[in-house]
Amino acid sequence: MEQINFDVQIRKNTGSARSRQVRRSNLIPGIVYGGNSKPTVIQADRKAYDRIYRQHAGESLIYHLNLVDEGKKISDFPAIIKDVQLHPVTDEVIHIDFNRISLDKEIEIKVKVLTKGEAVGVKRDGGTLEHLMWELDVICLPTNIPHHLEADVTNLGVHDAIHVKDLVLPAGVRTKHDPESVVITIAGSMREEVAAAPVEGEAAAAGTEPEVLKEKKKEEGADAAGAAKKPEAAKKDDAKK
Image 1 (cartoon, rainbow, N blue to C red):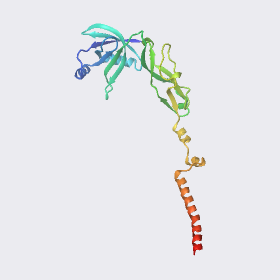
Image 2: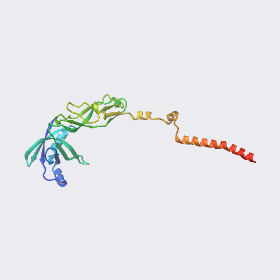
Image 3: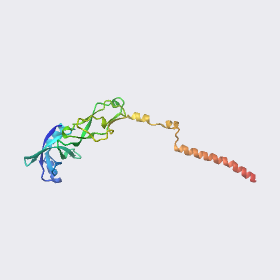
Image 4: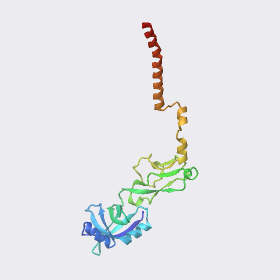
C-alpha cells in the first residue's frame, strides 16, 4: 500500500466562523483522531489534497501526515481518512477527518468493489446488472490494504449472483461479512417478468374463481332452495281449505 506524504498545519482557532475563514483561504479544515493524544485540529492545503484525489480516486490510501506548527515540523505519523464532508451544492470538500494508525496493527477499512467484464445475462439475454455492495469492510494490516476488490461478471447469466465468498481477497486480508451476502446479481428483463405473470385465463383454468362469482353462486343456490319450498307451502294451504 502506497503512503502519500501530506503536510497539515495545526489550527489553533476553532468554531464555524473560523472554519469559513480557513476555506476562504483555500485551505480545508480537519481533525486527526486516534493515538494516545487528544484529537488534533488541523488545516490542509486544498490544491495539494485535490491533486492527490485526482491521482488516486477510488483507492484506499495511507497518508503519512507531517504535522507542522508555525512553519516547524513537530511530528509525523501514518493515518487514513475517516470521513470527508462535501458541500451539498458544489461537492467541494469542506472538512476532512483523519484517523491515526499503527502500521503493525490491523485495522478495519472499507474497500471498493469494482466489476470486470460484461455479463452474458446482460449482453445476450437483456438482463440488468444490480450492484448491491459497492464496498466491503476488510480487516488487515495497513500495508496490506488492497486498492480495490475485483468481481468478474463475464459468465453471469440471468438470476446468477456473486456472493462475498466468491470474492478473492489478497493474502492477509479477511472480512466479517456474511459469506452468503450478495454483492452483484443479474436481474431478469421486463419481458421475462411479464411472461412469468399469470393471466386471468390461466387462473380460471387452475380452478380459482373470483370471490364475487362465488358469492353470486351462493345467492343463486339460496334462491333455488326458496323456490322449492314455495310449492310445499301452497299444498298445505289447499289442504286446509
